[in-house]
Figure 1 (cartoon, rainbow, N blue to C red):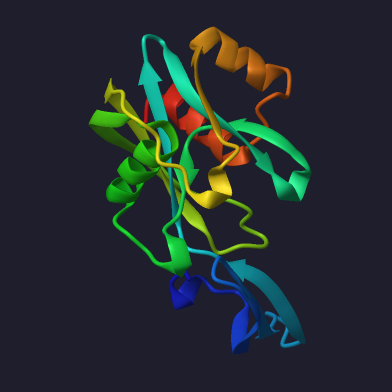
Figure 2: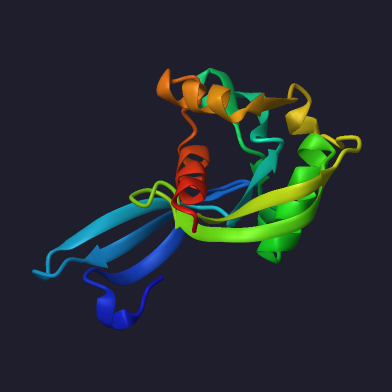
Length: 182
């Protein structure tokens, strides 16, 4: 949450309406600036790390089936710790990269911190550029058993963005940070 002076909406009470080992749905009773009461529901998930693995003027992407949208999705490697745990962002980024692609980064540069779905989730993420890559074997989790990993030249990644093949908002925001040279 932000500084109390920045808060326009006051939380009166809070409760967990639903919870799994991956997320919580929280329901807060609130008071708006005009004094009227209300309810605000949102998803609590631990922060994640997203890695932009760059090699030979191209990028390593992963593709997997994303149940909520009912289709496969190309994206940069990303993930959270299991069981709602938190971790050092760079350590998490290195682990996600290794697990999903088998790659290890000789250099990892922090590009920035972002938030996704700010109107409905508390989750934020740190973006890292991984270079000086060493290839190894991926160690996929059970939820990732259909995950595919492939390298694409930069021009093809940009075409995938232009034509709507890549639609993952976090991957697109991370690529923007990279292009801005942050």
